[in-house]
Length: 396
Image (cartoon, rainbow, N blue to C red; front, side, top):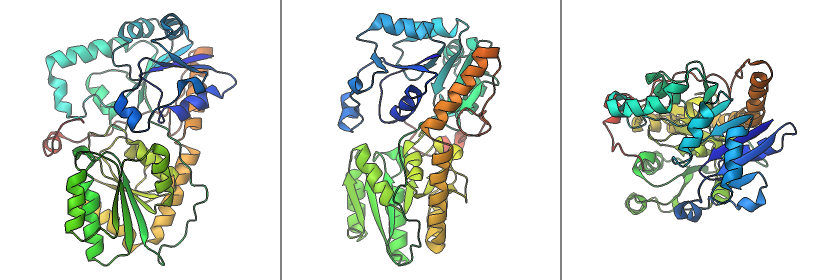
């Protein structure tokens, strides 16, 4: 079975899944990179040396071979191609051959945007026309299915998907936190939609209540100066550290040392791969339910805690719960690592995708997975109109 994945470029988030696909004996796997990575991504440590991976092809270097694979493979998966393969994509999706599209939300800034006649026409041309074709939508986020239901696309063909970054809890000791400071970690770009100020604010609360903790805020961005000043004014410089930006491997090292991981992005966060990473490292995650990854990965009160509607008050309440019941930190962390190890990982995603494709190619039948990747995507209700008007509603 020849399977080709077409996307903008290979990166550390896509690589584990691609390596898992390439390792399967029954699959001839190719990843087509349609553009070089942007300089800002390279500076963030996202770069991958494509020559290290024989399955990676660069379309701008071998266009004819890549075209042949896109159109002729048994299965073709389209990710984010910046419109550079639009005509090829149309040809493939119209061909009747098994194909997939990976998508995050199309109405992250508010589903009210679906009423735009011009926008609706464009979305229907891109998606609705394939209703009766063997084209399936891999929903990279819990709220994707709700967006696509608005334009009546992919009925019964929307499946759970996501990102499957590397992480593991090897060497972690799940013990009681009573005898040492609780280590807290936050990681991401220091920008509005990710609400890093929530981490500093909750640190002030924990400090005022006399809890023993340390906190690392990892990342760069336009809010870094503001956050540093707030930490200084609150007298938290001995316990709260702003590390600046770190390479992905270094971020994982910090996650492995953390007891608690804070994820505070709002509804503009399509997925949020740091959630997978922190869970896989065995940290107890307190996360915003508005971000795409969270409803898929976290079961509240079992392998983490979810706060609702971007509410700081609810966020603080859930962080305090862990400090008041710190036996739950190890329990959530262990269950989180088990969730990633057993269900939400690259190997599981690859095997379920191949199983699904074999069923269709051999007898025309499709059988979604029972849970996790390639299971049917439920229609989760995203943030409503009032909620999307509460914040600076701009993707960054």
